[in-house]
Amino acid sequence: ASPAGDGQCIPSSAPQPDHKIDIDHEDELHAGWRIKEVYLYSDGACQDELPEGTMRSPTSTGHLPNHAPALVQDGSEDSEWWSQRFLLQPFEARVSFSTAAVPVGSVRVVQAPGHNSSLRVHLGIAIGGGTGISLPPTALDVPGVHIQRQDGGDVVESQ
Image 1 (cartoon, rainbow, N blue to C red):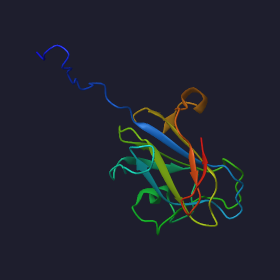
Image 2 (image 1 turned 90 degrees about the vertical axis):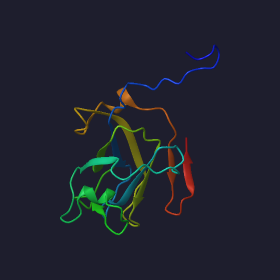
Image 3 (image 1 turned 30 degrees about the horizontal axis):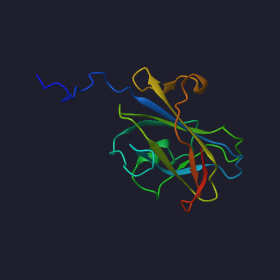
């Protein structure tokens, strides 16, 4: 027994749930949407990168041959996921993936110049063992910080 007032560390026995992350483009695009790489971080400032293998089962609303969604996590910014269509209205294309039961504090999305857009990134709880099903955003939006950066890294929006 610990002395009174000393405190005791008790580890949680509750498992962390798998999460699902959806990345949507917010702009009309005329030359398709391309993502080079997606990085996940444990903190809210994109400093402490989560280990390789945290991201699982990337999917998309469609892709061109040789540009599958798995390329957003292949460790190279020389390869790209390409949307299946070139002319896209806002929110017509999406890349989604689940994470291995770890808290995700921030996400950095590297897009291809000339094929980039403002983004909406949604973090939800994956249902069915990370199979890519998530609750509607209105029921599950997680309070946090939304930061958009230009290609050079300058913050253009923070709320």
